Amino acid sequence: MSKILFIDVDGTLTNYENQIPNSAVEAIRAARANGHIICLCTGRSKAEIYKEIWDIGIDGLIGGNGAYVEYHGTVVCHKLITLEQCKRVVDWLHARKLEFYLESNSGLYASENFEARGDSVVKKYAAYKKKDNAEDFTVRKLFPDMIYGGNLYRDDLNKISFILAGYDDYLAAKSEFSDLKVGTWGGKGDRALFGDFGVKDLSKDKGIAEMLTYLKADRSETIAFGDSKWDISMFECCAQSVAMGDGEQAAKDAATFVTTAVDDDGMLNAFKKLQLI
Image (cartoon, rainbow, N blue to C red):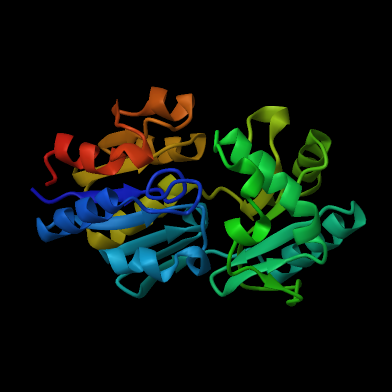
């Protein structure tokens, strides 16, 4: 019986240096050859799904943590931050002197000083992910196609991420913007490095529900693959779930089983265990 696989990108399909293990490519291609459907389910917007990922062979995309759903080029749904909301957030971030970037399917648009402020932050992010070469990380390495000097008042946004000067910035954002979903990433609790704004009440499981409705498919056919707390909603709505061996403990605790690390053939070993290949 064919399955629908929902695969997170960062820390699951790729390691945190944006590298895709050859074994993962081979596993996905073999699974598709066996009739299984491969859908990405990620916080990334479509602009961050680079050619090397599409070239593996991908059937569908759930991007922006559920904001955008596409299957073989057909847009199933797209829920956006409004232009008015974008203006309010951008003005508020500027007033607090917080650097940020806007996440759209057309690209990532950086605030005026995001790169200068962000280089030290992405090094901390890499260290948090236990990367030996954390000091080599830069904004341009983590976000190779980021756009500088673009229009910051936009009506095509899935999300907005911003650098936290402190946890109080997250708490203030949550209080100020009750009409948006406000979260953190890049660390647990008050150690988080980034905050983000998204469309209210959206999450990965909502995107999966949209995809299953479009495909006329049932939950019993689904398997989710992830590595972090943001993937738990995906785990909970799928029949089976797999956490990566080097993922967060919360994800491991929520998953059906834990595979090996991303760079230790994690995807390939999981596909074999699930008899997808």
